[in-house]
Length: 135
Image (cartoon, rainbow, N blue to C red; front, side):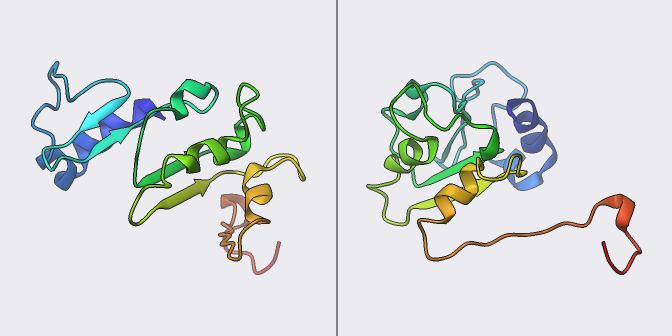
């Protein structure tokens, strides 16, 4: 995930414009934090360590490949429980969860989705099936 961040900032014009530090060593350009000239910070942290969920108050939490997260992070709770604690003080909190499902019944997305009123799922056709009317 972290390897894609620099390329995205470099290749998306509106992000590049907000990143005067791009390509240079700067305190606002670290592996874990990108602070844009608008004042917005982008943290990119792993989901396996409980310390990554502490001491950060944010407005948006994004989980990439949530199905691959451990169900219990260092015996402190599920990753979604720990991460969503970070957005409790936000005026407009948002929790974005994306993943490719793995083993049925063990998916973090499905487990957390059962606790909420709305669940959005997007199914994408496999390239091998393009042009066919049914699976």
